[in-house]
Image (cartoon, rainbow, N blue to C red):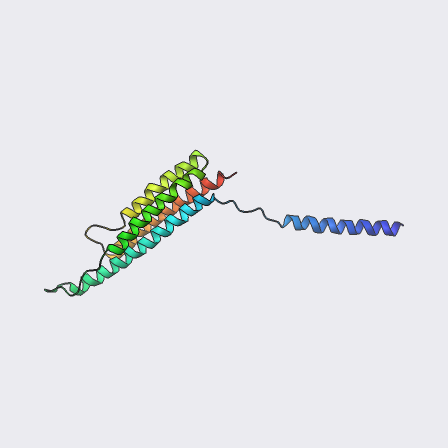
Length: 168
């Protein structure tokens, strides 16, 4: 009888240790911003990246055109059209503005709403100021682009952090 009792206690102790170690390995899910906020941030950033890439291509093509025609009496070829990146900017602005309303509704506190209010005009401004009147050199664009990306990165982190803390 004593052997049976000791054996049962041993089995019970092993089972308890196994089940408690299994529980310790379960990780709590990561906090995430509400769905509309995530869609807004990802959509606006992807839109900006797409349009800035189109503008970069335009700047590169214009630079090659200017280089080929530098010092020439007669212009060879035609300058590239900026229509592609300008259409992208207009379309992206419309889409981003459309996503702002649902994101603002899901931002449940004042700090989250303020973070969105800070992000929206910065994002719109970055798109609206994508092109420079009179053009620019590719190196100038890349330097300006780096600063804009850093600003948007910081504002995006702020939006995501504020929205995460407000989901509880």
